[in-house]
Image (cartoon, rainbow, N blue to C red; front, side, top):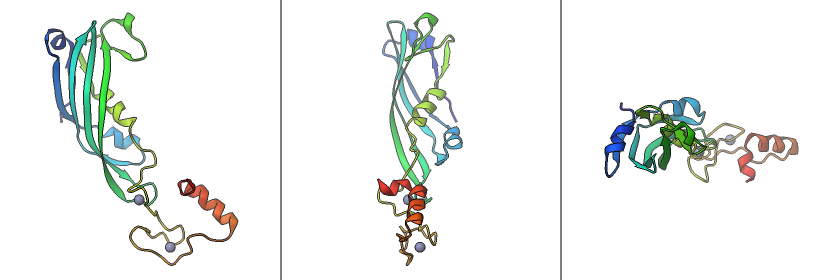
Length: 171
Ligand SMILES: [Zn+2]
Ligand SMILES: [Zn+2]
């Protein structure tokens, strides 16, 4: 599996920018996000160009995220297509919030691609907007089959506990 390197000397010399098209594996996205079971290879379609002595990398990254639904715990896939834009400089004096210091000729873009994806990860993923979740009484997946349990026990203490366990149902 490739990684995405940008060579700043190539970008210096290229008239119309340097096209970076690679597929990379970012397994850490699944390791570090509790609700992500796995992540497909990530396709990066980027172009690097120099303007005013800054190196701009623009384009898009694309993959499929395999989530665990936060209500029914089933696995489902969600395609991800994100814009990518970062700016780099060789000049330490020009580094600021949005401008990243890149002192070497070769810049590894993988960490920035990973960060872009991490910012788009859902923390309460749902297999579908109206996912019925698991029955709190018998544990059946209510999307697959209805059960005979009383979904709203009348005891208000239990109702309060149920709200704590699944606060999204009150949204
Ligand atoms: Zn679900
Ligand atoms: Zn039930």
